[in-house]
Image 1 (cartoon, one colour):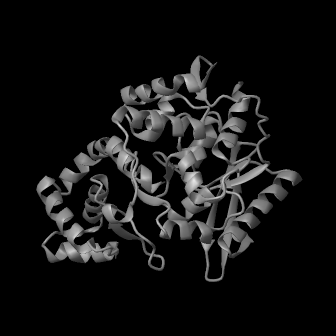
Image 2 (tube, rainbow, N blue to C red):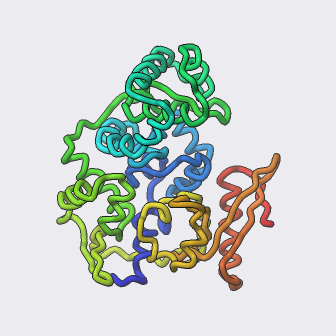
Length: 357
């Protein structure tokens, strides 16, 4: 493996260059977890990795509870499988709680308040009820808990991190919450060691070639835990040194790795860009700076032949979607046509007329 081959391999292992799965659950299972704080962006990310699918089909799977949206790995939402919720929460919630502990203290949130809020939320949701964020705000206000925007977000996140609540079906365009014990019918029972191995297997199988530090960042695990996970599956992966750095990926076993697509329009927070701490394989330093909004928040990007080559954004209008392109260089005719095809695919996926402006 050479540095130039990394984009092709990542695109293939992620399912971006040659989708093989046919359902949202299969796509999420393969990835392990898919960053999803921007719901429509995450739907598009999944759609790019599934054969013959639309946004409506994926949203139906979400509403049916075949995939869930909760805080795991890091302090943000991810799509995961219902059967993975309990072991993944048990493994990664302590790290998320530690990360947000200082913010909780600033907001005046402590274990006594969380105990009170969790009890009220659980009582309100019992009996297979689902409630919106505003519903929960009212319930908490009724028992004297102040719920400005930040406090409410942290109270709900805490309930997720304790395995109490998870996503329910959409009500119009509003998200709802449900009790985990009522929405999750089956769970995988894994030991901590098995959980570390399973998470490492999912990550390197769908994101490789990747480095240990990439896995540690993506998973939110400490370096020691990430290394323990990698060590447990080391014999199942191929190791390649590039510029003195070890990269781990699934063995190719004679597979023909397809060339990267000419063009892709990737969402903000797509796993191809967000799931690595070292993004040098897909973009040079100057372009990385141009696609980072703040911190690790990535903008939506135009990818040409596996490399970041620009950014794009959408404007949702009443009857259409406007797509604005910002390539970092002038595109040749083949590239321009490929990008325009991706824009049309985006509109067809969401069932909306799309206009390139």
